Length: 363
Image (cartoon, rainbow, N blue to C red; front, side, top):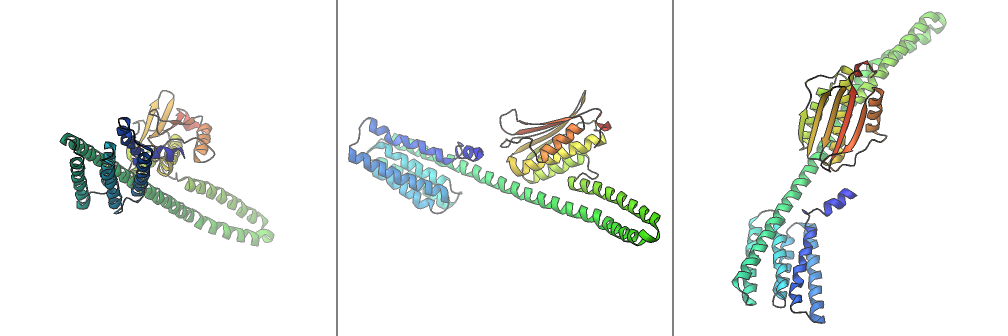
């Protein structure tokens, strides 16, 4: 919710540009209007706001008639108050939201000519026309830049959603393949041995007990393999996991800085830290809305530290889900894990530390 409110109030959003309507009332400081004139002016402003909001929501060919309506309001009110020129400037800004086409260029030129005509009809000096044309050009350029940023943000978000969906589907297929490979043969063997033990139970109790013991051993091995398959850590080191996460993030349009310390962690540390990298990378793809990510390890005097930082929306915390399970895993290895806000004020930093004796801990 807070992220949506922040996006709406961003300076890049054109809703806030409506504050410039205050220039309309500057002329009233020198020549206050009568009640009827003020009522007509406020009604005209309500019409303009409706046209402005309509064009913001559509962003298609209908912006042209909306901009024309705004320009006509400027023509109507400029002879009454010079503040009416603000509608002509807004008309240029409304056209600036559209993609660059010859029609848009023709529309902006028409607004420039309209400003010259309005200034001539109201017998204002040429310098006033120049100021209005400059303001209209600046408004159109600013609107074009803002619209381009919004389109880029929308494209980036779409790429991240697609990459997240692709990564989730790839993970689902990987788990399905691993479970099939691991359990297909194992369950077949368990079924055969269970049938054999059932047939030998009366004829050869000793052999039946031996078969049951083998079933127990196979079942324990299969359970361990399934846990590894679900965690996605079979034969995957920290270096491999970090490279895969970087590949997925970069495919989503994020810039990733990967800095792994030259000192390799122990196998147990590498497995545990690989889990942290994968979980943090998945959360960044799905929730953060970030543009830059840094994955870094450092060898300290008392252990090894991993940090994954992003410049996204922030708000991540250790709960009962994936991060909570990883925090418990770190604690089981005599380590620790934290999730904090980035120093810059936006984004998240996930840190995991394991002691130098981590290899002696149980995975």
